[in-house]
Image (cartoon, rainbow over all chains, first blue to last red; front, side):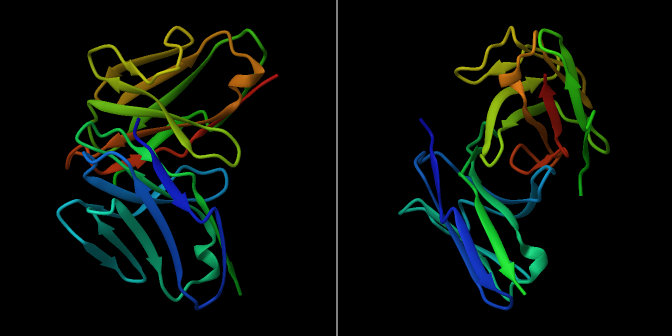
Length: 111
Length: 116
């Protein structure tokens, strides 16, 4: 079945450094790839997304890249801040709208 | 952005009882909503797709008679956990696609269910 693998499971960086989280997906029909930030006890918050007809998208300090051939997509956070500390999830979906989530990455930004 | 609410935010119930969780889209209509379950330190697992005016579709392994879903209107979907057991204790989260299409989804704040 559809599967999304996410790495690393934990990531610790110094404030101001960059953080990169990577995901791979198995379903070639996937065409939408969102990233969510989840804080403890809260629902996921959409931070950026990309569709299959685009290779890269940037929003201020956050960027996402997509390699359809390799079925890889990545989240890049630059100039990290302590408030970026949270659990980040990648996901993939096709035209059904059903999201398949990666396992999550706990990001810790040390001040 | 679009807002999705859930009620209650947390609930404690005794084993064997039923509990209902509401999911509302506050500023848009949603013919489809999704229900997820998240155990501590784990990812979100899709349970079912709620369809306004028709039956919900459940993911493999999810008992439809235990997790009753009703999509009564274009802004409300409910999940009822029937005959709850301690293993049903989890974080239940709903999501709804925005009017822009099925792709972009917004999530509710989640409901923490504890079954004693």
